[in-house]
Image 1 (cartoon, rainbow, N blue to C red):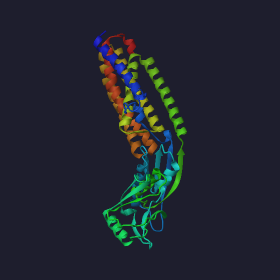
Image 2: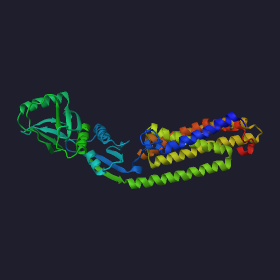
Image 3: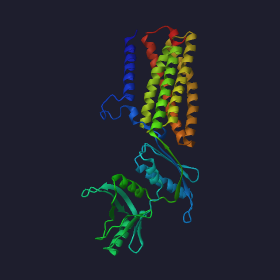
Image 4: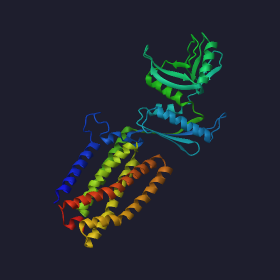
Length: 413
């Protein structure tokens, strides 16, 4: 027995065990170590935490016809509105010539969210004589806040330089009169002009809550929709259904992983045990990459992760079969490990690269749920190549160097 290699191997096993526990279990008090466990920072998709799936379609009107430019403007406006909700990793994408798909996960009130998305949000400032003084196009910004003196929710308006000039002229012209503030044809406020407003700033009040003011602020910041929009499909996923799906997926993943680990140890003995440790490290690496790249985990994404586990095992099997052949040809254990990895490298690389190409194609041309599958599969493939070719090889050599088990039968020969 070589104590140096044995101590290294034992230290590695303890380190992996500690990291594995910290990665998935909330050991520390809330907030003490904000990036642990890793699973806390992995966002769940619509199918796992509930939310709303909406399909919108742009419609022609007598005044405005739908074209590619209008669709690009519509997509950008809806994206700005959705981002204003503060939803984690929303999906907003164009589908076909006139449709836009929106998916919002973790929304408390799906109906209100959809209503906010499809509102035209056309703002007008109308003089007493009916003349339109300004529109939403003259706005620079709109931010909701709470007035300190009255503790009421308001939306602070800031105009563009051109809008500031228009508003200053209007407040001079209509001094001691009312200027109506109208949104989508509905009167929001009809303030009395006491003094000319020259700085291009105003506010809208009268909201029942800060949330209501926030909604109006989001609509005004994002701008009016350039075309008429209709809701063609609206599907709500409840959090209970999402939790049930997540629980089933986790259960399936645990069962699948347990069967893989048992098979590797039973059939390949010591190399199988080493591969199982490498798989554990692989899983931790993948979870970390999910957090780094802000991966939104969906049911297809979980399927991609589980499939990548099988691919990682497949790479180890190819390598171990080559090692067995080298041992049967009479090579020493260390030489057989080197030769086995060298012979298996091309086959492992080719199989992973071809699968990775397919995953990349799925990501760029597939729908949102298919893209989740492709992304997790791609991360899994790249991670499995690292663990199979580099990590497994190093641990297998380290295990052989300890000379705890010298009989080649325990290495599959």
